[in-house]
Image (cartoon, rainbow, N blue to C red; front, side):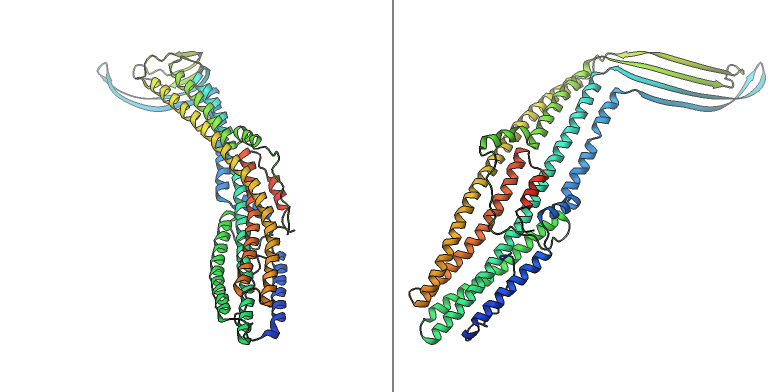
Amino acid sequence: MRKSVIATPIAGSFPGAPNKMPMARRRIASGILLGALAFNAHAINLLQVYQEALANDAPYASARAALTAGREKTIQGRAGLLPTIGVGGGYSRSNMDATIGGAPANRDFNSNTYTVSLSQPLFRLGNWEQYQQGKLSVAVSEAQFGQAQQDLIVRVAQAYFDVLAAQDALGSVQAQKVAITEQLASAKRNFEVGTATITDTHEAQARYDLAVAQEFAAQNDLEIKRTALQQIIGKPAGGLATLRPGVQLTPPEPANVDQWVQSAERQNYGVLGQQLGLEIAQREIKRNRAGHYPTLDLVASRNHTNQTGSALSPVGSVSDTNTVGVQWAIPLFAGFAVDSKVRESIALEDKARSDLENARRVAAQGARQAFLGVNAGLAQVKALEAAEVSSKSALDSNRLGYQVGVRINIDVLNAQQQLYSTQRDLSKARYDTIVNGLRLKSAAGTLKDEDLVQVNGLLNP
């Protein structure tokens, strides 16, 4: 919370008022404390943001709708194996004017017919392959939705910690501006009493002006990061819970990168989707080749005809016809269309096989990068924690040296800048390490909501 609080000093309140310096520092500290308490009171955590994303994220909603649509492929494919039943009929009324035996004749007669038909495929290899493709298509939709779920977890975490990093960067700049303001006031006082040169004042003023410019840039960056998070959850996020002070991050388990790579090559949702796509392409070859195979169907029908007469006979008739049998067909020539479709599907199978190999390589590379990112981040966090301790000691030493005259103002300003930059880089390294840990599990295909729960446990309650 220390870095996310906005504490703006009043320029010009320190010079010429050395007796008010302790009170000013107490006001700044009190403002930071009150701001932190107010911020925590309305902060939401990572899990709450994730729940909002589940309800409002547009890409996730699109993936959910695509899954619902994809699950219909099984029913559509199975339809080719089930019987089809149809009813048809017609009604007609006829009027005939004729001369029969030299005498005029006028006749009206009606015809009413209907037919109920049933056809049950007995042997249609193409329909069977289409049914198998439908089941595979459902599995593809589920793999794509699983990938969308993992992507949402990573996107939410990335956007969440980007906001925290931007808050820390802004807090670092503002804290540095407060420290520079105090140093500027000290330089002016020392110049007035003759213990320092005007150069110290000019250097502190230049650093202050630079800090003001950096503050505007940090505020703009924070607003951009908040907008990115708002795009995911569909509304402003408000205050966010921050990492607990001194949180300890754990290395990935297992510690062997090869095991993560092997898991990515087998379980990554992108790889699974391409594997299913290859199976679909292979069955497409069989389905197209079935265009050369005979077909056999069981057919049954009932036909009812009711006529009141006809042009040849004034006597009406009623008839019912029931038919049951088998119907076969042997395709002989289709203008080379079947052969062309087979060659096309073979080429698409080669494409699917290449896409699968590319997906495996991409997943393996993603796992390696994330694994190295986690380990490098842990090492960087450890180094920056040591650097933070050293920077604090260096700043204290430079301040003491400046007071006794063995250090100049620029030394103190440099030490201040080094400390705040180290603290900003330390928080950013922690965030990157956490997100890389989620990316590692996503590449391996093992990322779940429970992993986000564990990350949320690192935040302030």
